[in-house]
Image 1 (cartoon, rainbow, N blue to C red):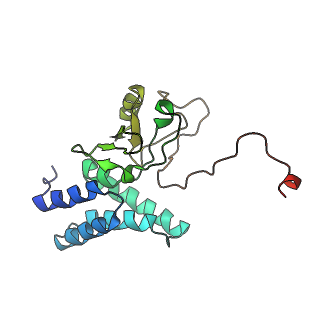
Image 2: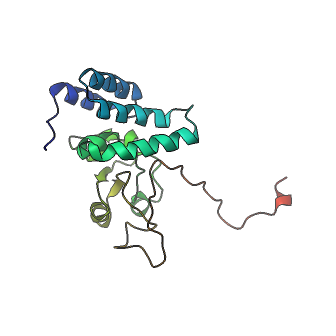
Image 3: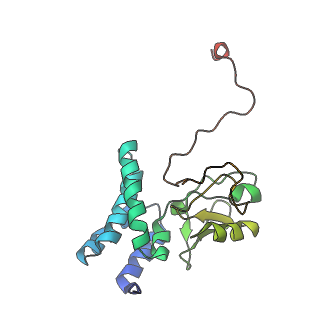
Length: 193
């Protein structure tokens, strides 16, 4: 069954959100509006995304939220979800000499819901619903954001399939980022003072 088109009111909220995606008050106002029109799944999705990044949210609660978001995601229009998804930006380290510190939700929206603009580096970032789509963008030298929930493996933007012996599991954008390790050999414990 095809999804109904977005109303003019939906589009107004989306334009405001895309103009300042990091401003979460607009997300909550949109969620309230969706509740009024009995769009419970979309409203819940927005509220969960906001709660996920709230300072007081515990790791246990984040895990529950991520699980519920994964349940809701396939029931919603993928282009609509792309507006609110929170994947990291990838493939910038091949184009630039730095790894982009931005996240998809922090980038400026464009007329295309699957493309956002990074004001820091001046590049467009392409949201990909699949690994194959992300690879195509990456091979063209574009920065990409892969939809949360896509099966991932290390180096998957460069390879057609996982290397032998690599577990095919989910690497979620909602998972905490690994801590950066200092360059060079580790210092002995006694040299820390």
